[in-house]
Length: 232
Image (tube, rainbow, N blue to C red; front, side, top):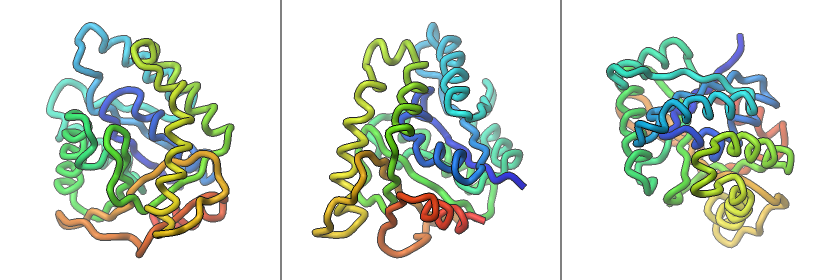
């Protein structure tokens, strides 16, 4: 049975910015990745275009898209969780520095709690860094190139702020931060040029718990498979 992961994206383009781990899960572990956008942005005149851009970006990454529709987003997300049955759910952390990102965190957690059960959650960062990330995932140049290609599909967003051009610098700085935040105080920077930081947690019974002690650095395919194996 093919395992799945669900990315709850605050906006179209977030799936590409934070998508490294999902991309590697698809390519190296055979996961099917679903992207569920919580919004199509605040500009009504851009929403149809952003939907098309999201489809193009997901084609570039080999991801699938499911839209919540115009009804009750919480109910639609619970339905998506039941249909997709994800082994892991990606969503922004509660203090990410954009109101839509924070609202998306609340929407995701409420849907998980309403759905019941045990969920492996991978929290993401962009507008405000995670204070305590516990997972650093390495990227090859080919991963960065694929994520940048997908980001470039979001033509309207890139025109006002070239996220695709700036992605490598952000991922390079993540190695600096992750060396000590994930690897431990005083740890040397690992031998990688690019990475994305996450916080892996478990949501069950309306509460959070840690899936492991300390931090994990995932570079090799073997380390990635060991991480994914815990999500059975």
